Length: 453
Image 1 (cartoon, rainbow, N blue to C red):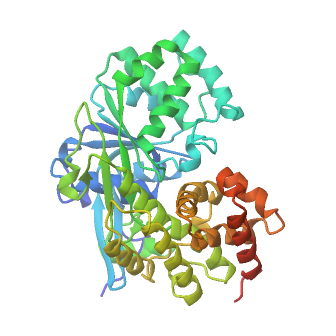
Image 2 (image 1 turned 180 degrees about the vertical axis):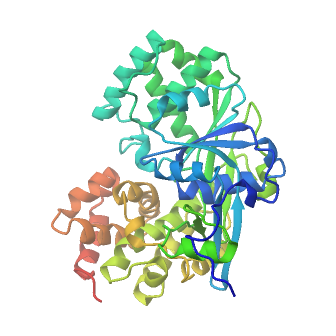
Image 3 (image 1 turned 45 degrees about the vertical axis):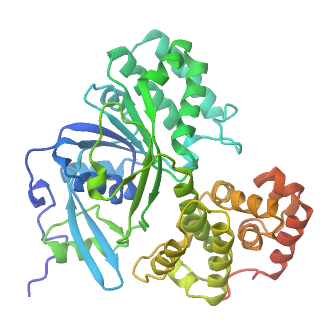
């Protein structure tokens, strides 16, 4: 058998697609080009029945590397679907343009194109620049700087200067301002980050920003854009160095930016698409009238358990979700958290979902690193753990699973901090709850000081 590696295999391009021509027209703009977007929204778009009508122009978030590599491959990349039995490979071609997010001029021009009907976002929770109350942080110096810059740009209508907006909301608002100037039809904004009621959150964020930039732009916003709330789910670990060689050996193509993901995927959407959308339901997406139960289930059970394991697992010396979930102590803590979450999810099925989560967490070939999950844990705790803890305490229950997540995070990140102060910073209500603070303090005393192996 001939061995093919990344050095000898031909570069992956649109020739690898089952139907390489014609290239779909750009009708979707994405901000936050990374592995998750490519394993999720781009994958759903490529598999939709009308995929030939919907191309994606994708812009990176923090670094331009993915865009540069994708451009050399004409936007095509390999999705590696990985389970315990083996790998399956699929060439995805829905991304037809890939650019650096720092190219704000190009981003604004692309968003303002009348043919664009959808703007999707994966900019992480921190990218929205929110306060603990979930509103745009006007005291953030970068946000304040962007407001001053946007005022000049919107009033003058001139060329974007070398000092361009730095925050994602400001860049998006500038693109919407350009759509208003171009008299383009209304566009759907579709955030795909793990935030409750994310469509409404983005609407409030952009409205608050627009009100401080230009009243006319703020008044136009409700008619110029709709805001779709989503719940997204697909574990997408960081690429291991050997994955590129595996792709070359298995497909015959050299791919510099493959993506590895679990077989499971889920996408639930609620909202209006005034200028049309891909038929994502033909690739498995669900459209619902009420998003809250679906996003709460995912945030509290999947993401909440991940945040718990990111601290409890690392304290016990584990590096991945699968390793930590195989530890009886970690598993018991996750099960306790799931009990608490399920008790507050009466409007959506949880038993089968919980079983599926256990199977997914146990998949040893999905190397989902706890250190990666731990990034931005303070924000994640507020979104994933605090709501369950508050609901449990309101019902008169101890919320021990939630308290464990907070205690383990304190032990991992700031063991000398005052428990009551840290808890109050996460949730004023929980900080005032003497019983809950005492529970956190007790659990903190029982947790390992550091890795035990």
